[in-house]
Amino acid sequence: MQKLLQIDDLKIYYKSKFGDYKSVDGVTFEVYENEIFGIAGESGCGKSTLVEGILGLVQLPGYIKNGKILFKGKDLLNLKEDELRALRWVDFSYIPQGSMNSLNPVLKIEEQMLDVIFAHVDVPVEKAKDMAISSLRETNLPIKVLDMYSHELSGGMKQRVIIAMSTILKPKLVIADEPVTALDVLVQKLILQSIANLKDSNHMTVILVAHDMAIHAEIVDRLAIMYAGKIMEIGPVHDIFKNAQHPYTKCLIMAIPAINEKNIKSIPGLSPSPLNWPKGCRFHPRCPYAFASCSEIEPTFTKINSNHYAACHLLKE
Image 1: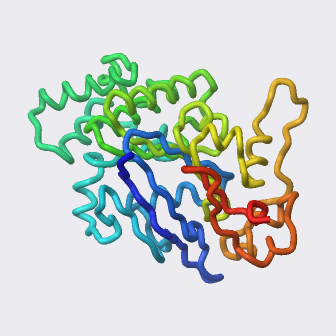
Image 2: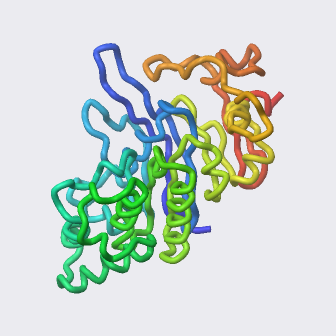
């Protein structure tokens, strides 16, 4: 498989009067062409900060402390803002968290879609309108949506408009940050199916960020489990669910509601503060299997099989 994106030891911190909040603290992974790569973890683990770092959207007091972000072999951290702007939407695009509120309420959908096109490529107006219509059709939206304002659309339609806008220039990479949050399960399925269809028809790569493990089980090819600014486990999604190796991954899977279970098995304790991560394994204060080494030594990745890795001392014992 051809690598499209490579992240090496990425650290993204936020300055404060109390010290640095280490939201992303040494993350390394690769994303291949034409796959859906999932990132899962509890709220506050650094998922959104990670994707903002990839896109060059980290703003003060946030800053990138260390690392490399290689997109098609080019380090995005070495590019100037105008060079990054030339890549955005054309080579990679973003479906932000809370994207249903990203539409301009005083402009019709057509105007907003044409703005995206004209900001990045030079095409005639009629060609741009055809592109907008085609993009809407790919997300199963009627053409009449072009003549509507955002308040006239349902939540699911707004979300599909954002997806249509993010894929209108056929980028190689689309990063979707919690794209189905606050939507009912039927609309969630429709949105996820739209993303999967666009990925196949346009030969795109998708990074899907979601805290809901059930969503990842349904759509992604490979999955990274993130906790306290670190990747804890990474591998093919079927391996993760059938043969999870890290205790945190197992806890997340057991927390998925099941019809035949009366009580949801929640993870005990609270996520630690990025101002003061625990020493050793960052999950050890909440881990049911923790032993002495876990609180002293930070675990490194152990290879489970050809494409499955986990960072846990239990694997070495």
